[in-house]
Each structure stands twice: as C-alpha cells, then as structure tokens.
Image (cartoon, rainbow, N blue to C red; front, top):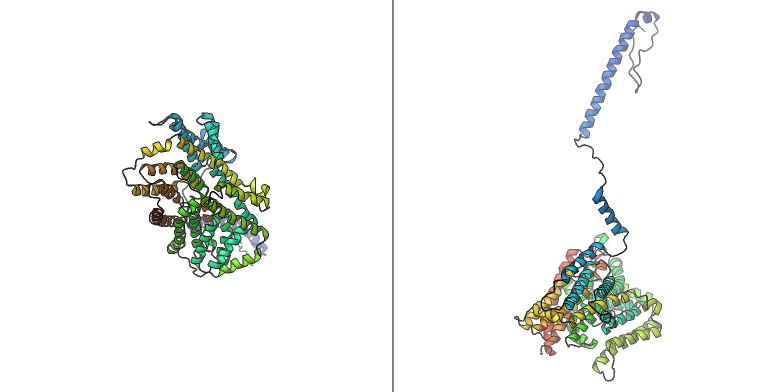
Length: 568
C-alpha cells in the first residue's frame, strides 16, 4: 500500500484510534507530521460527531416526551402542633377507643342540657325532664352512638343520676305483659328454625303457586302472612327464613345475578315484593312485630283494649287486600323479564325431597303452633272457658316446646341475643312513654297541636299521613312508634276522632318499613345483594305508600264503619 493513512471510526466509548498500520517503512519516516495532523483532524471530527448525535438525541426525546415546566413536587410535611394532635386523637377514637362515639354523645348531651332548663308553661319540671330524657333517647336511637340496648341502659343510668324517676318507675317496663308477649314469641319462633318447619312451609307454598312470576310473588306474600303469626320480627322472617330460600332461587334457578347484569330477569321483582310484603305482614297480627305490643299498651291507656283476635279481625282484612296489591304494583313498576317460572316448583320439590318426610319433631312443632293460635282465638271469644291472656298463651307454647325437647334452654333460650336485646330496649322505651302519659304530657301536647278545627275524618287523614311519612327520618320502626304514636293518637282524640278508629288507623300506618333501604332492620340484607338500586327502592316505596294510604282511607275506614267503630 502507499503511505496514506486510514482513519478508523471509534468503537463505543473507546478513544479515537490513530491510524491503521502501513507496510511501507519509508512512508512511516516521511509522514510523521501527516499522522499527527490526521490524528488531530480525526479527534476533532469525531468529537463534533458525538456532540451532534447527543444534541439530536435530546431533540428527539423532546419531541416524544414534551418537557414540563412543573417543578418536582416536594413531599408534604407531616402536620404539626394542634392539627397533629387532632389527627392522632381522631385515629385513636376510631381504632382504639372501645366505647360510645364521643362526638355523638357530646352532641346529645348538649341537646339535653339546652332543653333541660327550657320548661314550657303548663308543664311541671319533672314531666319536662322526663320528656327531655325521652327525646335524647330517641335521638340516640337514631344516631346510634351505641347499639339501641346500650342507649336504653344508659338512659336508665341518667334517670337514676338525675332522680327524675324512682327505681320502681324506672324498672316498671320490665314487668309489662306486652314486653313478655314478644319475648315468648321470640322463644317460640326458634322452634321453626330448630325443626326446619318454617322452611318446609315456604317450599310447599312455592311448589304449588310458584309456576309464574306473579304466582311466585303471591307465594312470598303467603309465606309472610303465615310466618308473621308467630315470628314477631321482620328481620327474622325476611332475613332469617326467606332470604336463604329466595337467594339461591334467584341465582341458581333463574340465573338472575347482579354480577352478570341479569338482576332484571326476576331478582329485582322478588326483592321488592318480599320487603313490601314483610312490612305489611308485620301489621297483620298482634305477634307480627314487636312494636304492635307497644301500641296495644298505648291503646289500653286511652281505653281501647285489643286482644290477639281483636287485632286480627279488625286489621287483617285491610292487610289481605294490601298483600294482594303488592305483587301487581311491583309488576307494573318493574316487570320481570321472566314471566313463567317452572324452575321454582322444581327447585321447591327438590328441596322437599332432600328434607324427607315430616318427622316427629316437625309434627310436634306444627301441633303446638296450631294449638297456640286456637287458644289465642278461643281465649278472646269464650273467656269464661279459656281465661287466658295473649301473653299467657305464648308462655304455654314455649313451655310445651321445652318439655317436648323441641327447643333447648341453653341453645335457644339463654343464647337468644335478639330476644334479650329486645327486652332491654323495648322495656325502657315503653317505660319512658308510659311515664309521660302518666304525667299528662301527651294530653298537654295534643292541646298544643290543636287540629280541632278540622272535621274528625280530615284530622285523621292528616295524622295518619304525618305518621306514615315521618318514617323516612327513622331507621327503626320501634323508635318511630314510641316517639310519635302516643302524641299523634292524643291529637286525633282531641279533634274528636273515635278512639277505636284512631288507634287502629295509626297502627296500620306502621307498615311503612318498606319505604327505604334503612327504614327496617331487614332491608339492608336485601339491598346489599345488589338486585335493587337505591332509586328503584325509593320509587317502589312511594308507590306502595300511595296504594297503602288509598286502601286505608277507603277499605279500612269503610270496614271499621261496618263494625261500628266510628260511633263514639
């Protein structure tokens, strides 16, 4: 080769090479300066090339990922001082503190403290102070700083500290026969679950009337009607007995599942029918709801004495018509996609086959149940032969079940949390309301809310509508009844409404538990399944409210006129 040198490109990050080796020795001697110059040129060339590539890379990156002018965010400084202490206290209250909600207790205490000294004219200090305790108890029952039973026990303690009631007055509610009627009904109803008779009865109904969607709806209503004879809890009937039956029916037999978006096939319809029927069935029988016994006590205070049969024949006819309207009303609002339901009888038949024939325990439970209902009827019709009270008959039924081994003391009596929870709050609320009556508070309030300018019929319409609609602000039917029933009853009586009609009309308005997902303890279990939206629930609640009210002022009022209740 000639003495010309060849420049090699750089490799990676290595320094630029000098020149390639040459074979001509004379060229080596004569071109030392040339090599030096070439090396200088090569280094400068490759340095410029590196700079250009680096600049181009930055330019490309700028085009792909636009640069932002935002400064990098600095990590937020942890709160200090008072704010830090407050957050620590809040976290401690929510996660560590085992007691009542301190903010709620403080607010209720402040309310009571303000009202304590604002005694209105015409009332004694003792009467007003009992009313303040009653108001604070009701507010706490709604706000729930503690469970309702805990709220009522604290109320007893406040009564003792303030001295507004004697010990005998404080504990008078625990000796009330209405309280123990519901207690015995709770104990008796555990026999349905222990023997499986409750589920068998429901499956039998579905087997014979569940071949269509409407028939299935009426079957649910019939189940509620029968179960409410002896189960005084909407939650126990709807969530304890029927929910385990209806949920697999919707999901497995009809593939109606919110997760698949198929809740409209039949699930929405079934849930809306069930919660509406559960609320109406509670007003059907005296033993249909715990608050019914409370209202009977308030009725006794104004001279209206209702036995189990007296309640049934005066309330049940209107309830039957309303139950008949529920499936049709829901069918019109939210028609199910599935109209024929042959799967329901098949599933019911399968479940009955799995249960096998009725055994001796179920037969015994059925006989005792029928006997107890017959005694309730006979003790009201022929008192000379059967001189028993409703509470006494319920106690007999529980005793027979214990003697026959259908229910067990340890398994079903002393461990029945629902029954003893009810004993605590029911007794205290009933005691406070009764003490207000004894001290003349409800009469004073009725005089203050004067509707005597209205005709009796119009006054009763207003009072019933107020009682029905105010359920929207209560999450408990019992709290609603104890707070407003005696007051509105006195308002109606002061306006000239016959006591027999006023007592029964307000009692029927307690079928308002269907209104929202929170107005009955059974509703959250059904709402949580996802078959019904909040809007669908509220729309159905308003529609059923309108139907109920129309039936109340037409069918019920007319029926009571035939029975002679409109006469003073």
